[in-house]
Image (cartoon, rainbow, N blue to C red):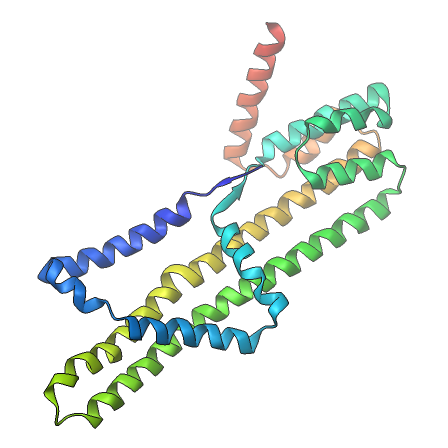
Length: 271
């Protein structure tokens, strides 16, 4: 189940707050207006969008909303919970057979686990299950990599278009040196496009790309454990042996969480 990831908006708001603090600490609200320039923003956003249109096709660019949405969500799948799920499945499979697991899947939300268990119930060979599920992981990695690449490129293009806007502003300023009233607006374009380009790249595009990369690594790691669990359940492994095998992937923090969950389960059974 996916939940809203508060860290992404908190990070964006915190970054903007620090910029606002720097602006307001100088000239207060009066200084804020000098940092707002629509022309500079249009140059950076329009130029970056145009560069992305050239770099990618429409099918790839449609991934952008999906990628941005992924940066604001997190998948709730803790490793100790995952291990307990497979221990429960393995226990029922040993007692009642693999066919009994279809009813057990009603309480499982993860589609990747469901797919693996259904393949096992259908009697598919372990090697084939491994190949099918790893192919799905590879396809997921490819999709995520494409989305991350788009954000990385946007992070490269935005500062470059900021510099282009700076050059435009300088040319306009030099062409109108005899008119002092145009120096301020042209200088604003020259300076603010660089600021906007750096801000968009380093507060939004590059951090979101990094978050997506970290999410992909964690998801691949969990899916590999799921494959191990599915094959263990299909082969009829002892639930305790399977638990020990999967527990090798736990960190120290995860082990503490698993112990707490075991205590809670024991207390529940006593009641």
